[in-house]
Image (cartoon, rainbow, N blue to C red; front, side, top):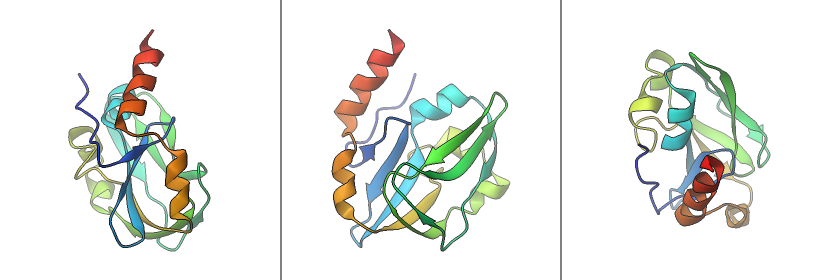
Length: 132
């Protein structure tokens, strides 16, 4: 069973989360629901620091024993930090998707883009509908 989705984040339809850090940056990862669907994650292809991304364009790639999936950027911006621990320990995404398994930090071009994303309740409703 998935862990509850923290209320302090915004969510995408593609199962990414974005958490504001209070300094114009966000931390990005995939949701617990997403890591459950992927099963055992064996590799995370992290973006280079300095990469510019647009909202909902591929940011990173997560490879599991089942499939390879793009991780989409919740907002437009620039990669300012990556979670390089994932290079050696991709399983952290499975173990702690909302914590130690974060993927990257982005400096937002337009914080208003966060308004395009769902809150935790909206994301949970979407997952529930997907299961039917």
